[in-house]
Amino acid sequence: MRRTLLKLTLVSVAVVLVYVGVSQTYGSQESGGRRGSVPSRSGVADLQQAVNEAQRAEDSPTPNETSEAPKGAPGPSEQCSALGLEPLPACDDRSYYVAVAGGSDSNPGTAAQPWATLGYARSHAGSGATICVNTGNYGTFSEKAPPAIARRQVMRAAPGQTPTVTAINVDYASQKDSKLTIGGFNVTKTGGGAWRIINVESADGLRLSNLNVSSYKWATGGEGEECVRAFFADELIIDHIKCANVHVGIVYQSTDGIRILNNVIEATGGSGIRNLYYNTNAEIAYNHIYGVDYEPDADSVPSPHASIISNRSGGVTIRGNHMHGMGNSSGIMFYRGEVPQYDDVLFENNLIYDTININAIRFYDIGNNVTVRNNAVFAGVREGDCNGVTKDARFRYNTAIVVHSAAPNSSGIKLYNNIFVGIVGVAKTVIEQERNNFAWSWLGFDWRSGSPSGTSRIITTQASGCGNHNRIFENGSFFAGPVNPRFPGRKVHDFRLAERSAGKNFGDPSLQPTGSIGRVDGDGFVVPGPCRGPDRHSAGPYEFTRDPSRRAPP
Image (cartoon, rainbow, N blue to C red; front, side, top):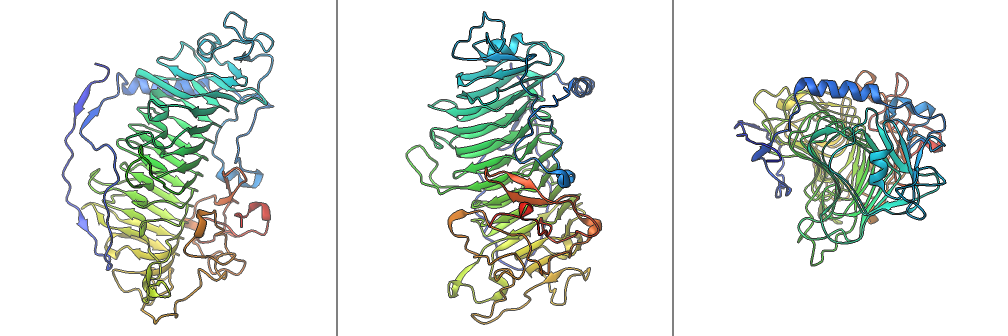
């Protein structure tokens, strides 16, 4: 058998339900495979894994002085937010070349006499080689086993060239180190077949960088197209990819150390990122994730059902992401009953707005070491009969964050320096510590005079008549410019702080991240923002700056 199936029985865990003082619309759970039979990783003993990791570190190539920096790279003042990625090495006379037009696998692989196929180049270029690929359609790049090389190969677009493949399938029979980076390609699916455009299985250490990924049709039966699917792929890096005309962005399961960095993910009716089962040490950082209008057809799922980021594993850092225009299941969702408890979750410097579900951030079964800090969440207005908005000021906006349940041994959640434009449904019994948050309203207990720490600000504590709502988050006094809380057009919105904002330097500097979120550039990528410090400690993901190049777009 290709993989041994190990049956695991989920441990039944009693959860402590948290009363949040407001009726929540739970909705159905997002579709996706549930735990049952768990495939084991083939032949990866702890000692061998340590050897592989050490070998990868030793084999990392030194970039050329003329190597290319990826899109969205931080400037000199933003290095505290740098992603730590090596630029792709440059093409030069030491590189090998591939070309559909005029190439032949009997050639020596030089710029003047290139090879013709990617598979031949991969198997013949040798250890540490840079393979530069010219414009042309190379069909599907498929690899069933890695070549016997000691150092990483880089297969990248040649300067000024736009090579195309119809799919990428790196699928090994047992878990091995791929020693491969693929960068600069268009990955354009042009017909039917498998519903994952890029498939990675049992290939450790693969890097997918600077790819434009799209399908001829986002809905192709079943759940629709997935941009990237990765199973049993440790230390996988997915960076600077643009996913378009797909149902779901990135799906991963049974991975350790996956890094999803600075991508642009446009999803139609499905999740931006699905963090499925048995993942550890994941990082999801500086991605721009958004939805588009859903128009079902004969091959699509009946109706959209998605989270921006859905989670069925803990052990995840979600940092610096700009997320909007989707999430009818919820914005950020940690599903109930999928794991005994969610431990080691860091959610920081994120911007979330225009979520479809009434809950922007939604936790079940929280465990230990769960921190939510320096985020801005604008939940959108709640419909009612006061000029289209509810009369009760506490419920003017939907729920920004809610904790539905906690495991019996949970230490609780830590909330620092956040801006919650909406209801906060987090009871005292599940809070380990809170400091310096802004909240529109906080239900489940009475904080009329402020938070237990005395440092957080609650804007609205009681009902008001029609037309008496506070407008601090809409009128341009808090954020730099008026905000329409219905977010027409699914556009990128400006949530940097106004010069005299109450959120400016409001955060606790001892509890903040070192970096911040920045603007969205012309290609849709998130640029990391200025560094934080003792003189820069604003609430939310942005730091105030007068430098227009560091600001979010209007």
